[in-house]
Length: 327
Image 1 (cartoon, rainbow, N blue to C red):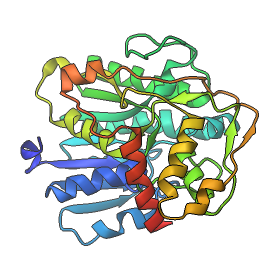
Image 2: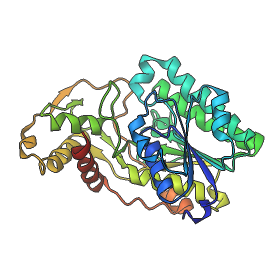
Image 3: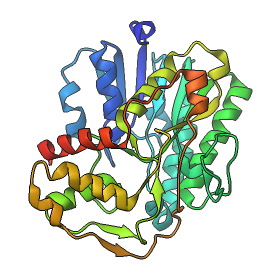
């Protein structure tokens, strides 16, 4: 899959973040020239420390809200994997202006810089939040509802801008609607930590995870290696029909929050049996949360030959092993 990239240079924006650093690691392990653009607002320097002495790695410390930084990072680049964004629905509700500045203005800067640098293809992190209030399951790419948060609006605007840049300037794009990604290097700390690393940290410390609602809400939890696979397929595909559209990036199965905590306890108790006895607590549902999320991945399978290798159990096993070693 990656033979065609041996003499190419790939820019990963947000390359010091959770998903971005995993992409950088995979590219570098295949001897592909990799540029990382990050301002370290949410990314971590420790995530890219192992790469700093690699001759194929270049770090550009900069902000996608600054067009000059974007232009600098795009110089000599063939493909872009745009991961830089401010995630989190609650964060966007608390501070919609900053979320918009990063996710919309920053995204537009990157598109302009990619266009001016004559980049071959621009692959970007979209979001399952774009499905909004559309209730039908599974989610199929062509049917969305109204957004339920400022974050969701920004990610939908990304898709609209990407479409216009292809039509107006001929820049090929692919949007990847991520569904609840988890795995190694996902930060368990901070006010906006994702549910899996947060629960893992709490269980390891014998603290009670707090479930929003009764625990019946469900998500299509997606292990990081499935996401890496989709990004690589998106930049290497030669299928013209596969370009200039969006794809769900998921496993195609859903897990309730109660099932998730049971699974986490099961895998963590192999290291420390007393974790089985940690109590699970509940609180009110969160504003902007949708009850259920489940992706159809048929489009990705058909057009990109996507074949997700990790279901929730296999992914949790890998993630828990990593957190036990690194927390």
